[in-house]
Length: 324
Image (cartoon, rainbow, N blue to C red):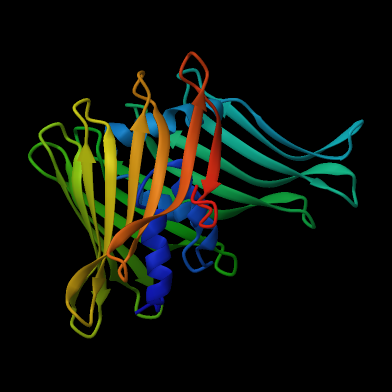
């Protein structure tokens, strides 16, 4: 069994709770054994409209080339990174390339590129990542993602391969299989890791979902595979609440206490929306068991143009001394 510490798993599952801006900040804590680019795949079984709504402004912004600048001299901006994007005639992203500024060479140098392929329905089926080898002046395969869908266009299978430079071929790495209920809502997602020594897939993570009549998620229960028990062990439970317009207003997170065999309340998020239904404020709280109360932790504020596109957001940590 591929060994992953429980502390690592906690960070992993925190990172994949929501497709929201603040959750992405947690990805930087993930270890190399679970690359950041792969963790988001576990989000795919849960495309409810709240997540799409939160992500749309960001995705729209990324449709053009994105440039980041640093200013060592106010009169001489130095371009640090550039990402370029190419699309086919149907608007599908077919190529994205990242470049960075090489100070010694004083030129922009490629770093990674992704080549995408789609089926006849416009659904992504292959995503291949290449890395630039500067000494050889050529692109080299790095990782490969494959996707399969059911007749309703829901993703049922995700397969990730890593490039083996010695064998010059892609090798198995991660597999995620997702099943759906009679209402086409995600029901079970199981993540398996490839054991190269035994040449078998081994259970790793499992998620079970429930939804309301509007297809919005009500609960997400996470499990970790226990080799000793040869069974799934509780890990995390999230509960979701919605307002009359079906906006997600509360997310409650609990973690399994193995010693007491009970769920421990840990974190809560409360969301506020503007009159246009756009997420305006996110309050983060953590549970203080000693005082049996919620303590503020941080707040996010989102700002939009009149057309609803996101142009800025603020992160405001809670100041205990000032009480704000």
